[in-house]
Image (cartoon, helix red, strand yellow):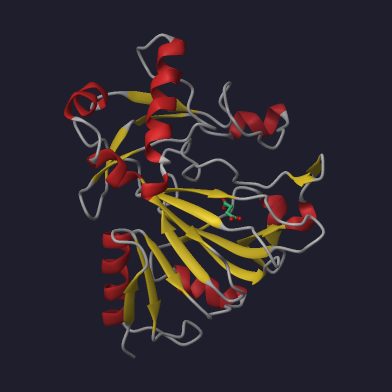
Length: 283
Ligand code: SIN
């Protein structure tokens, strides 16, 4: 088996062919895949069409496949495998209210947020429904020195749903809400494998900046978010049935798009790979 690597963005998107994940993968190939993942951050494997058990096996190449948080959207026979399906979504003014709209990194309010998330496209609408990614390592590198110095030791409280969240979250019972973690995370993080610094942003979950007046904190978050979500940092994945994509939640933010015909069906399997506590870039 020889991996064929084709960069799809200059720095962070890599398409890999020459591999079939329905078959066992040896230690050397696992290492090559993890090395590519650490360097690039979004890996695209076209035409894999994995079944749930094969997807779990694929996930184990990158770590421990963890439980899904939204238990309402897991496969009954494979509780580690979640799904994103248009059939579960409410529609408002003819537009689907999709999960994952607005750029974010998954479960940033957890002490140890998932290292990675992976989707397999099972059914895709004829138009739209792309997933976008932005490289928050490059976005950090490009900040001017003054701003880098200003934010280097700042931290933010991440909660289930920020009081200024641009997107809405599932309503939780008081009991469920009490179980959802709240964690203070650094604004600039260091990647545990590559050592690269990156911005750590999630406007849906960040409750201001520690030690700053509320409005000033939210203004700084917005400034960094607008910087990091510029088109020059973006890779936009147009799904084809069978595509398998995995991304590193410490190196990119991602967002879903609700721009497709709500009567068409979009369905993807989803797994998450367990992560470690977020490390600050500067101590
Ligand atoms: C998500 O996992 O945030 C949603 C991604 C998608 O469905 O495109």
